[in-house]
Length: 433
Image (tube, rainbow, N blue to C red; front, side):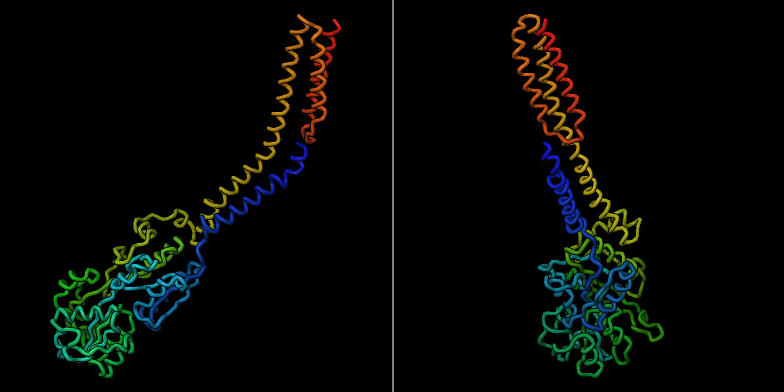
């Protein structure tokens, strides 16, 4: 017992402290990890609309202490989704329109929200063109084969009984390069998908000699392709003084999605959603006040976004600033339980030794009580047998004297020996009668 007691630090206290340290490490890394302090946003082609949008997110997130790196790509509208689908790519968030949702089925991405409209724009340098049937035999820029804009262009032309082979496709240029081709009259029309802030759209909607076409039977097309939605672009809404557009146009749009990897930290997802709420609630000529963010998405919706839409979020994030809330949550739900268990274990170790000593002393007191009862019975009926009782008492005294107890229990050890001495004295008196 004394050896065990002397080694209590190595055998009891140290293992408890080591286990506590391992538990703290596990809690802070796996159970309640703090969100990362930096994030990479995949934002499409340089100088594109997605890059401008990512800059606005950077401004909002950096106010929370989250540094943002914007990663552009030359892969067009599908570039951010391609980066998010690559597990080796550092990008954690990005943007994509709804027509790319089928390409995200194999990617580990979730949508946080729809954050705006990306209309299908049809620009032409022929002022007298009234419908897409007039593009037969002309050169059209709509991105490379397999792209979303090319898919929509083929869909629009097919509705007008124009086959893909009836037009000449410019597959080498897209974005601003395609816009320059149109301005320099090397293509006859440009069909593209982009937000109102996209540089291509801003340039062509305000360039003289460039006309915009509406889409006939837009509702019918939307029925065939649910990721497209019809809307009316009112006359003069883009530029009232310049009367852009010069007439009401029926158009189609697809939703702009804010995408994240499915394993993004929940608190960081909520930070993105807070930023989206700040950025996209402002009305524009394409959206009403507080129309976005919207949670009816074409991509799988993140479980965190579902909770956010229902108004369910940790109460600490509502009561404290972002980083203080994360530290408080880690401390309250992770570290404090570990510390409480550690303290309980450290307080239990002395109790363990006390219980062991109590059990040992209770055993000897029980034996002593049995001997005393036997002494009384033998003294009345058979005093000769008291010699055997004395031998057992001697043996017990020898055992108690050889007990190896810690010094803190010396008073109880001496008390037991006094009781044994009193029992011996009583036994000797009974024998002397």
